[in-house]
Length: 299
Image 1 (cartoon, rainbow, N blue to C red):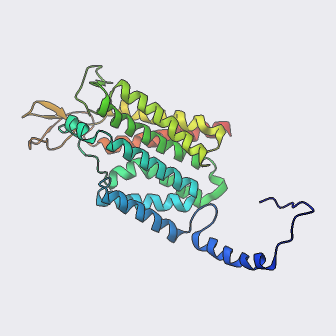
Image 2: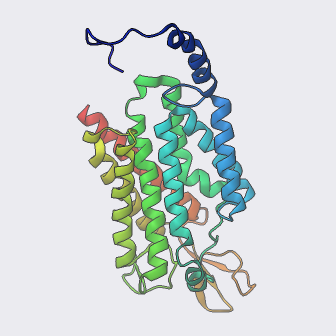
Image 3: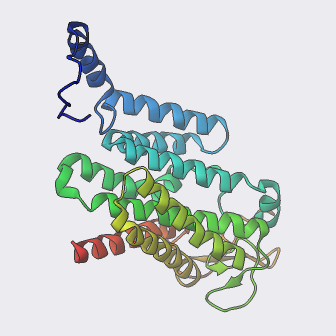
């Protein structure tokens, strides 16, 4: 509101002045223009997470983790919470598109299905929650937190959409490690459809972050570049470092400890302790580090 009123502006009535305490009390209950109060943030995040669980998008543990991440983001500010909500809606849409076809193509490969558990939620959203927490604790002193936080979530979204669209409409993917065709759903493999979706998703999420005021316009390219970088790191790590397993009964590669046929699988390569969730965390962390470094250099 403009504080410098023109000379002919009408004087506020006593009734309008009397309403000020009431409006202030209402604002205090809900939080502030920056974000809702902690109880309201927790309530909103819990409702959204519970709805996602009831729709089959989250496992119970995933719903709890999502409620925690969502509460932190919303309390940090409406732009933080809004970006997280848009991101979740976007990746959920990607997960649901062609679900039956994707499940049929990846049934014997992927270790986890479309319902995300707590580990998956934190691998994708934990860095973003850390950035939101830093923003809450340090305020203006954490000026770059929004940039690297948004980059982390953009990378997670880019990686997710690359996988979802690639397994849905992409042809036979090729391994980054060998260059040969591999079964659909294999980590560290790429397809044209998946690669286009990866870049498009990173750009789209960056546009959302700028549009809702989480990231300033001059920093858009940092979020976009770091988002794509994180998704590429995910692919390379998935190909070179993530553990690879083999079903001796079906004689086929897989990421499952116990194959869909019921047979226990054998370790065949990569680091035993590095699974898909750890690679996803590496994806978001690498995007955050690059974005932080670029923002600091240009400050």
